[in-house]
Amino acid sequence: MSVLTPREIVEELDKYIIGQHEAKRKVAIALRNRWRRQQLSDSMRDEVTPKNIIMIGPTGVGKTEIARRLSKLADAPFIKVEASKFTEVGYVGRDCESMIRELTEVAVGMVRAEIVKEVEAAAKVAAERRLLDLLLPPKEKPQYVFRPSDPEAGDEGPAPSLADDSEAKTRAFLQKKLQAGELDDKEIELDVRETGKTSMMQVFSSSGLEEMGLNVQEMFGRMMPQKTKRRKTTVAEARRIIEAEEVENLIDMDVVVKRAVQRTENSGIVFLDEIDKVAGRGSKGSGPDVSREGVQRDILPIVEGSTVITKYGPVKTDHVLFIAAGAFHMTKVSDLIPELQGRFPIRVELQSLKSEDFVRILREPKNSLIKQYEAMLSTEGVTVEFSDDAVDAMARIAQQVNEQTENIGARRLHTVMEFLLEDISFDAPEQKGKRVLLEAPEVEERLKKIMESRDLSKYIL
Image (cartoon, rainbow, N blue to C red; front, side):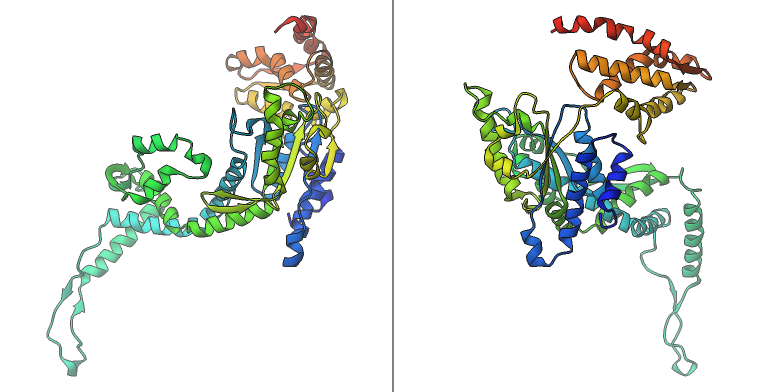
């Protein structure tokens, strides 16, 4: 985050997302502002609040992908939640604060993975030492040859036996063989920590206490003494088990939690999808509409800035970045309660995708659909190639189907590609070494069924 300028962030997003330049610019500035805030003095830093963003646009135009790629660029804790999951009193959904608990959990996982990399080398050394002790158990008492001390001759007591030197040589020999992997298939006995969970813990853990940020199994695990079980295993498997145990011993969870909470508070990103589904202000009637405003009021304090109690301690949401998104085809942003609207000062409208966008989506991104399918079929030894006019035909058909049925944006390309390559994918294992070149006439012939059935789609429930 400290090295990427807004322009560079947009360039990185361009590698994966086609078009939507305005939305990319907005999120790039928001991300850079996180870094700028960190450079300020403490008093000023607390005053700068994140400029939350609301993205408006139909499904399949890149809203979620922009947020997801942004979090990877920032190496920040990120979660995607659907606003429609939450309700005023948990009628059909979850407590709104659970999104921050999940975000903190993601941050703990990220920090823990970083610390694991830091202690891996030390864990390997400790694991090797323990393996050598299993292969060549150390003697309980060192052996000495006793002889009468003679102060005049310079003797000061017992002298070490040659047995110690012999053991050191044997240990060094075993260590070389161990490092070379020559002992990997040898069987040894090992005490392994038991990780079984009692049915009582499972009953408690499923009773909804996790919503309060409490992990009952973890609590019981800490209170009860850890049991070990002796089992036979190979040296290779024992090395893996012991290394994992040593990593656990070297990780200071207090440090992990402290870093994770700081990262959540200062770098966390929450993507609130389907925000339009809880917009129903001013709507008449009863039923689900009654709870929609309640959901907004429950989300409001979290977006405004509050303290959420998690199992890792209190987490403040004042500087968490919230990116909301919705199609808003049945409602408007103005249907949200004014307080919540005010907490999303940056609004950006994403454009519907056209045929030329679909052509670029099929070809240009690093992980484009065409590259994915070519790679997948190459595992069977089948080479699939697409001519330029075939790509144009697929894009044109995707646009036509979107226009005449439901507009699901770029997701329509998945439907088109699956339908187009269904026979090739099915027969691929029996056609090793075959080369298939798809051109426009064949694409149109294969996809004719989709085009012919579009008139019937309106009658299908």
